[in-house]
Length: 378
Image 1 (tube, helix red, strand yellow):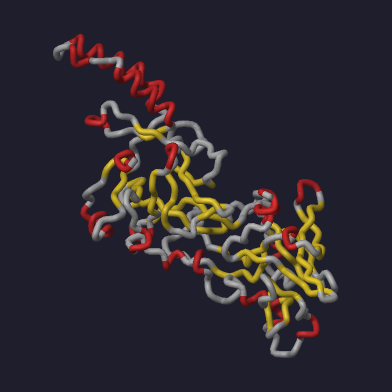
Image 2 (cartoon, one colour):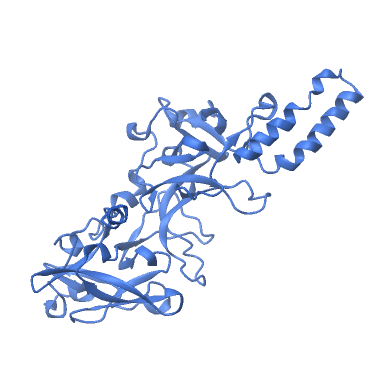
């Protein structure tokens, strides 16, 4: 029963399955793996809805030369249909091969040859679905298209939420306002990584600037930085030391919430950098704890729970206040710092947090008031 429930789970927003009526029986488009490492696939019609492969209209966010994404940069429609499911990291798209019973090929979304190829771009004209160039032609070329292919229980494919010309709601970052009532909650906070830079999350065509990386350009959520605090994400501590994204409310990966995690790199310049990942039972580097010792000196340190616990245990064992000021006190401080040095490199207090439920979050940020360690909200 659990497996059946999983197979029949609703699609994420903007995802759809292509359908076709054949002899009065509904068929669903299924993509089968082909080639070494599933780098391309083949399409077929099946009668079981649960076997239909989820698809999504593709939008692209244009990156700056350094690979970052500008504030307010809006995604643009590519008219391509990206294959998801088990292929979502393979950068595969549907291609129109012609008006056949099974009219699709499954090939790469990226590459220089794809920019001018007409077979990778889709559109609709009235009830007909097919190549975009036939849909927008001033001549009637619907004979080269198909009026039996629909999406999501008979809807016209281009009537699907992200099939129109407008940017889908969940991709339109300009509509998200971190000061809005919907994003405010008890215990929510925003994070400042550097002065005037706040942590946000947004959907982008990831790593688009890395043209040589196989699978680059896969659409998904990633951490981003914004200079506009009203676009910053609202975070909240959850159970067992998880910090999850409370808003934007659309922020999900595989229908699961998004959580913070420490960067997997070595401790150093980027060792404490926070990234995002899917919240599930296999969460890695994504459970946080807070130190309680020396809070009056350096603030609460943020780190893995076992590290913060070990840090507190060692710090508590050194009571340097028992020595008057002088050489003994300095020697105690030096010995204590040496004992803690093994763990201090795994902790950070570089992130400042501010309550997201203040009357005017933008004004508070401009005045640089009410900033605390993130652990204050735990």
